[in-house]
Image (cartoon, rainbow over all chains, first blue to last red; front, side):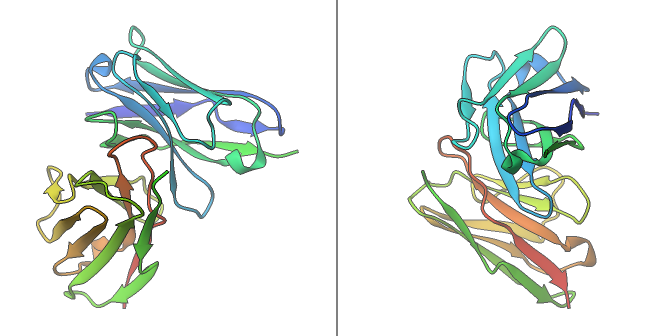
Amino acid sequence: EVQLLESGGGLVQPGGSLRLSCEASGFTFRSYAMSWVRQAPGKGLEWVSVISDSGGTIYYADSVKGRFTISRDNSKNTLFLQMNSLRAEDTALYYCVKGPSVALLDYWGQGTLVTVSS
Amino acid sequence: DIQMTQSPSSLSASVGDRVTITCRASQGISNYLAWYQQRPGKVPKFLIYAASTLQSGVPSRFSGSGSGTDFTLTISSLQPEDVATYYCQKYNRAPFTFGPGTKVNIK
């Protein structure tokens, strides 16, 4: 059974940083692309970033480019999202998502909540 | 970047009704279109890819169609468990933008 367990969310002041982690199990992590998708409270889904299975291909949404960095450690089955220069509009539930491909999203974690507020 | 729109933003229908949701891309995306279902309080579920291919385990009352800029998701006979918000997503190239969602309720 695919399991994705996010952690690292919390309350941070504007301009601050957070590092999200996602521990994966139940599948061969190193063989699949992984993504981050966020959802602001009461709002729709927003695609954030994706990293290919090897880490050689990475894409970001324009809204986070230059501020967020996605990475993975295939030896530890873990996905990361380093978030810097956080803004109020980054407040959201951040989902870790497995992809059957770089673009698609087939298994979703339960999410970790990031709140940016002073 | 390509923008995605959906219509209607919400709808109410009776159990057993045929429901159709439209997704439109601001530029052609061939058939690189996926659909996701998010039930209230739950994580999204992957329904359809390549505009019309059902993900394994998805009930056959769901179907998708379209190519280019105009796409539809159809529920042939609405069931109570289909109450959810449905999102389209384009994936021809990054950014892999979602539509704003269509909320489906039971009348």
